[in-house]
Structure formats: C-alpha cells, structure tokens
Length: 260
Image (cartoon, one colour):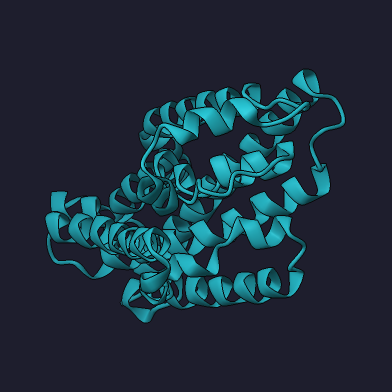
C-alpha cells in the first residue's frame, strides 16, 4: 500500500465527499426533526397527498412509528441511494479510470509502486471513504436524536443499521471499482459505475410499486438491503444479506483485473 497515493486520494476527493456528507446530514436532521413522539398524524397527512404508487416505489407507504423506524424507512429506504451513491460513483471513477484516461497511471507505475500496490491502495481508500462517511453519519444521527428526542432512538439497532448500509455500499463501490479498472476509456467506466447501480435501483422501485411486480425487485442487488426487516427484528435475513453483500464486495474488489 502506498501512503502518499492514499493521502493524495483524500486531497482530490475531499470536496465532493464533504459536500455530500453535509447535504445528507442536513436531510437526516430534517427527517429526525419531523418525528412526533405523540403520533405520526402529521406525516400521514403529508404522505396522504402523494400518489400511492409513488410512495410504494420509494418504500414510504409504511413509515415507521418510532424514531428508529422513521429513520429506517425515511432515510435508509430511498434517500440512502442518492447522496452517498454520488460519493461512491465519483470516488471509484477517479481511483483508477481517471488515472488511466489522463495517462497519469503510467507515472504512478514508473515509481517503485507496482500495479498491485496501486490497486490495493485505491481499493482500501474506496472502502475507507464510505465506511468513514456512514460512521460520521451514525455519530451525527445519535447526537441529533438524543438532543431532540432523548431516549427515543434505539441506538443498538441504529448502529447495526449503519453497519448494514456500509456493507451494502461496499458492494456498490465494488461495481464502480471494477468498472474503473477494466474500462478502456473513462466514459465507459463512468457509464458502468452509474448505470448498474441505477439499474438496480429502478428494478427495486418497480418491485415496490406494485405487489404483482414484486419479483422484479428481487432481481436487484438492493433486495439484500432491507432496513424494515432489521427494525422488525428479522436478524436471520439481515445476517445472511450482510454475508452475501460482503461476498459480492470481495469478488468485485478482489478481481485480478485490478492487479494485471
């Protein structure tokens, strides 16, 4: 692993990383502030003004009645695939594909670092960047929840939920990282890195929108990430899903394509 390259990645990606963290934290705070310990009538009234199919597609048709449940459905259903995914896509695209496209990969390989060292360094940064993102979100969520609604957040479940989403994003990041290493042109890397996760998201939304099409959602990798099952106490499903996502991530990051 090359520490200079690792720190260079931090410098090159810090702006987009910090912007998306601030924006996601803002939405996180807004969702938490809308929680009402006395009841969710205000949420029900607001959601009642939206088309039922739209709510089902976003997974908002069954909003949780507890603070943990509200966060799980309101933020970890659909919104979790917006701003953090931007970080994952942009970062993984820059790690290898941009260097290859600009010719700077040849410079990196002219140093004592082998291609394997470069690939391992970039993979470690890819995994660390998303892990740190949701670690900070976890701390922020606990702090804001305790400040606004002391004792309402099930902290243990919330921490596991964020471990769950980190593992999910390891698999998402693996898609972008593999695309970045095998694509001959930067535009192809970005196309795959964006297209595949968005395709999975569309499949999931189609599956949610109508019970008759629920099988379509099972074609998506994101079917393995189901916060509602965690909140409902279905630890068996969550454990198997996390294991499957880790296997997917290991296969994508561990491909020999990165090392050749």
